[in-house]
Image 1 (cartoon, rainbow, N blue to C red):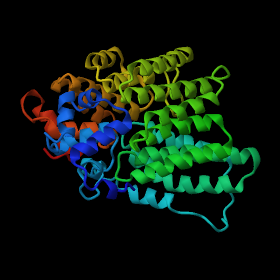
Image 2 (cartoon, helix red, strand yellow):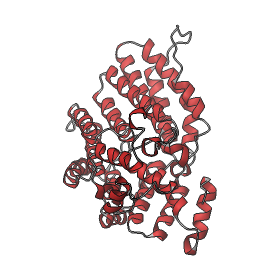
Image 3 (tube, rainbow, N blue to C red):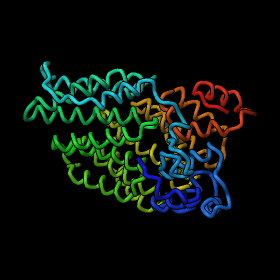
Image 4 (cartoon, helix red, strand yellow):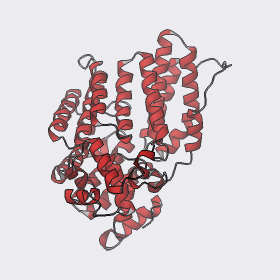
Length: 405
C-alpha cells in the first residue's frame, strides 16, 4: 500500500511529473498517449492546468501506471479500478481462496500430476473460449488452487515438480481473473506466487511464463522498464529455443514483453529491435502455430504491433498495423477482444470516432468480460458524445457495460 505521508504537500502537477519521470517517459510520450500535446503535460506539471475530468484523469493514470488515484490527486485512497469498473461478483470467493492456508494435514489423497494438468488445461480453455470467461474460471479457481497446493506439498520427485508447474499456471489464471479489478495487491500476490512455484519446480518454461505475467504486474505497479526487461531476458536465457517449439514460443514471447516495455517509455529503436526478435521466433514457428495457452504465434506478435505503435505515439503506424491483420482467427476470444480494443485505441489517436465505436462494439460482441474490465474502453465510452452516426452504438455499449454518460 503506497505511503502518501511524504507527498502530502505536493501538488497534482508535481505528482504527475514524479510518476512520469519514475517511468522514464517524456512529456511527448505521455501527452500522445492521452490524446494531448507535450505542452498540455507541461502545463499540468507546472500547475497552469488543474486536475482534468475523471475520464481523462483515468487515462492519464493508466498511461503513468498509477492504480491509486491518490498518488496523483492527494485525496483519500481510491483505485482507478474503483472509478472505472465494478468488482466481479466472484472476487470475494477468489480472494478467500488465495488467503486460505492449509497448515494441518490433509485427509484426502493428493491429486496426480496428470489429473492436475488436465484440469488446468480445461481451465485455460474456459478462459480463452467465447462468452463470460471470467465468470467461468472463477467457478473452478478456488478448488483448483486448493488441490494444486495440496498436491505440490504431498507429492515427491518429478510428480511434485509437475504439480508445481500446474500450480504456477493456476496462479496465472488467478492473476488474469484479478487484473483490472479493485484488488491490485492480489495481482501482485498471484504474480509472485506463480514465479515462486515455477522456481520450486526448477522449470525454465514455467519461469518464462511467470516472467511474462510478472512483466504485467511490474508495469501495473509502476516498476521501471529496466527491471521488466531484465526479468524477461534472464528468463529467456534459461530457455533452449533451438530445442523445441514450446521453448521457442516462450523465448519469443519474452522478447515481445521487452518490446512492449520499451515502447511504453518511448524508446522506439529498442522496442522495434526486440519486436523483430519476437517476430522472427513466430515466423520460425509457422503461420498456423499458437501456443496452447499463452497463444504466442504470428497473429499475436502482429497484433501487439498495434499496441507498440500506439504506445510510441505513432498513430499512422498503429492504424497501419491494425489494418494489416485479422485477429478473428486467434484461438482465444479474450485475446481477439483485447486486440480489437487496441485497434480502437489506435484509431482514437487519429480522432476517428466511428472506427473507435465500431471496434469497441466488436470487442464487446467477442468477449463482454474483456471490455468490461478495460480502462481505455470504459474511459472512452464516458467521453464520446452520444450523437450522430455513433449515437445508438454508444448508448448500447454504455447500457450493457453500466457506463454513465
